[in-house]
Image (tube, rainbow, N blue to C red; front, side, top):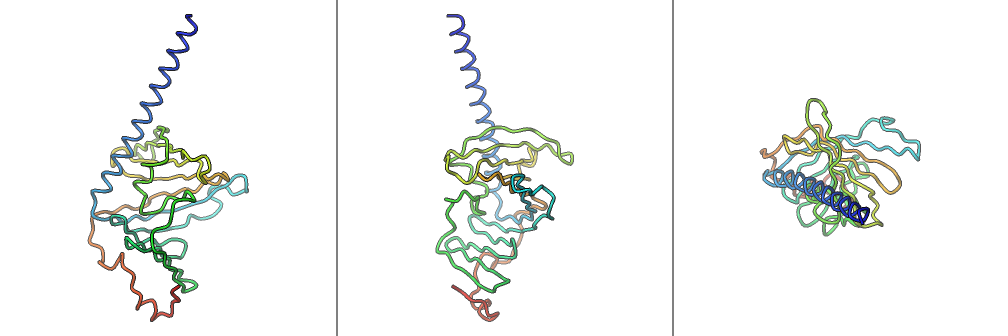
Amino acid sequence: MKKILLSCLVLIASTTLIYGQENKARQLLDEVSAQMAAYSNMTISFNSSLSNEDAGIQAGDEPPIKGIIALQGEKYNLTYLGNTFLFDGSKLYVINHEEKEIAINEDDLEEDDGFIYPSKLFTFYKEGYTFELGPLKTIKTKKIQYVTLTPMDSDSDIVKVEVGIDKNAKQIIQLIQTGANNSKTTFEITSFKHSQNIPTNTFSFDKDMYLKQNYIID
């Protein structure tokens, strides 16, 4: 009887601890999301890197890939890997500058492949994930709290997402996405600006301008 009672107490204590950790993780993510939503716009510069020990690709083997994104609500203008991804709120324009080709999607890309798209950067966690507080680290004098998100879908291409959050600034400074193939894609924010005066055409597609430059529009 005593063993049964002890087991029940351990189970209750473990469940309470897990639930409490999940609530704290969710609360921190909600605070970040609310703060980002309060900004009229954001411009974020970042570095991305890929590693996969199974494939012999170590972190630091290749120089990081730089990118920059402007965000306003669900609209975004992302420059990454030599392409521009422009979402005006209804259509997504994928502009390949090397090939001078432009593909147009009638809506933002779907999330079926597990990728976190720019328009969902600060809200993707709200559906389909469980939460767990990770380690608290000090990076360049800043207190960085990590939160681990695990997809509920067992068939997801993502195994987990680790989000590093500056606890004082309530800003995401790092995002590590681990794939089902054991690859890790790390995004580190190098510059963050918000509520600035940005050109009004940042989130609009200028068809005539690209046609004059001999781009092919699908």
